[in-house]
Image (cartoon, rainbow, N blue to C red; front, top):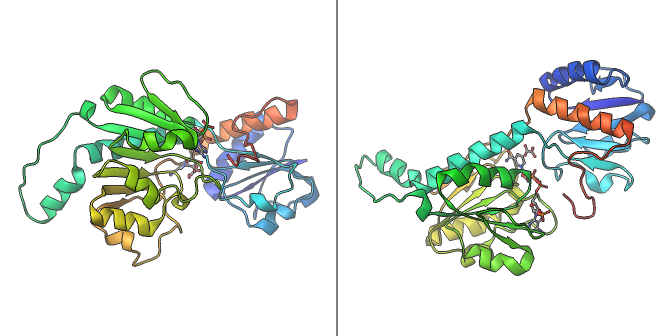
Length: 309
Ligand code: NDP
Ligand code: OXD
């Protein structure tokens, strides 16, 4: 019985060390480095894997995502009995909270406008607001959405959130499901997407959604590129319905050379760096989870394969 890792070499080395110390009974093999008997592979940790790659392991029991999302894995090709686990670790959570704080403060304090004025050589006054005058709506109230709310709350923003099921969070106006979506969209000036990419959420950042937001709203997408309809965003920005978009994720990644997003004055891109899986903390979480599998305990971050997240 073995654990197989597929991904960045530096991370693999750190994780091998952690497994040797914490789970010595389970050989930790690195794809491309160690000889692998496919029939022995019970656990696989990967960020991404081609469909035929997963099919090579007939006795696979658990597929661990190296990241918090799982949509990049070939789940359709995975037998239904294989369990899928996403990464829930403090490095990703803290990284995302920092990114959301940065994005919301930059948009709230009109940084895009002031940078544009500077580039034009203009010293232009514009009245600024305090955080309590700006409303931020978080789409997705999971690990990352909740961390985003926690970092934004002490800054004073007026906060709301939207999720699939009902949530009750102190000091946050919560909306749920399709029934609550339209009202949620009237409640904020900055919308932050921290949803998983599923059949239900693909394309959710589209014209119909933008039209229901207050005119001049801004969006932040740190979920997945597939949440956003690119052409609809450009139209909404060009018409002024939206004033700015901060995008950490795009479809595809990397964004091809010459793509309109690179040069659009109201779009601010980062190359999928909002939250990175940290080698040390994530390796400990993976080892904890593998120990849980071995002792039959519930897993942290197990995905409901029907819901898709
Ligand atoms: P979780 O699974 O913890 O949370 C997902 C949240 O989305 C839940 O609140 C869930 O609702 C809500 N949700 C799911 N489907 C719907 C729907 N159809 N309608 C409304 N709400 C919905 O995920 P995480 O917070 O850990 O991560 C979220 C995503 O962030 C990842 O899937 C990944 O795509 C992205 N990500 C991006 C990174 C980056 O660097 N840009 C880094 C890490 C993650 P409910 O609570 O009711 O279940
Ligand atoms: C993740 C990501 O899902 O990096 O962890 O996007």
